[in-house]
Image 1 (cartoon, helix red, strand yellow):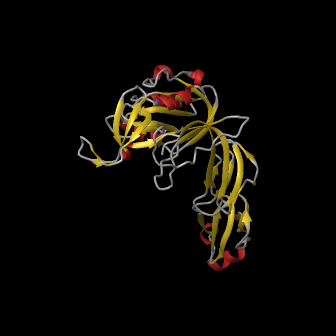
Image 2 (tube, helix red, strand yellow; image 1 turned 90 degrees about the horizontal axis):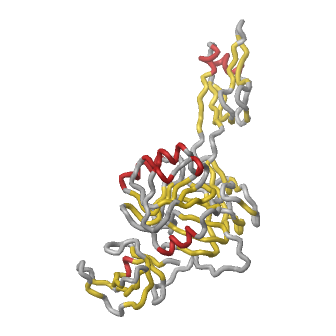
Image 3 (cartoon, one colour; image 1 turned 120 degrees about the horizontal axis):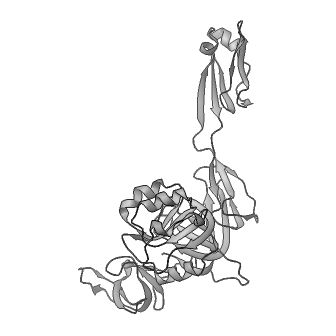
Length: 348
């Protein structure tokens, strides 16, 4: 189910793929880029040949090693020596921990850049997940998309979308947008990504995109999120209204890859300060019913949104040859259509 809501309570689990260190505490207020937890995914090791470096025997090298297994050292700390007239020594090439010292060798586990999990949105830590991360909760607008290039960012959103079927070109981009996240329409020009990088922008939200640009989007140094799909698709009326009415607000752009099994989608969170507790629709999962807002995910009405008027009580034979339960829908352009339920996503 794709979720689009002008205001809702949003809860997200932020977890490490392997056990690590939790940085936050329960009830802590966090910003989008705050670190929730961190770990070392693949420790890096360096083998130092002390005997060869000092030009001595293995037995002599063991006498000259000044460190023991388990010791923590900093870059350029003395490891072995001095020896000879020139007082030769071996120093640590990087900071780390001695794992093994002996037989003329020193195995150093160096300090690698930790893998970090960020909050992804401003909010409050409501629960801690032991050794893995935390649950972050916020209130705001939520707009989910269909594809992302795996990156996240937080910043001011500025719209270059004048209508749901608009197209984003390089003419829409200039240095006045530096540091912003841009909402644009359909993109088919690879020069858009190059200019966005030169400005630079913090991120791009696109209504749709030419599939030929996927490799470039994956290599872009900023997050790119696709709302409707590949090929030309106008933005749904619901998504257009929610995004354009929040132009000029700070947003969390989480262009994470879609995971069908975990129910994860790339999404935009727009933090809102509301005085009343909103109805929590972000996690609702219900059967289709008359009155539900839906989005069509297959041709010939792909990308359009509308409202279910009636549901079929028995399977319908569709022109494609499919026999399935369907729904009569009033689309946003007032067109009526009968669509298989499997081709619909409920819009919250």
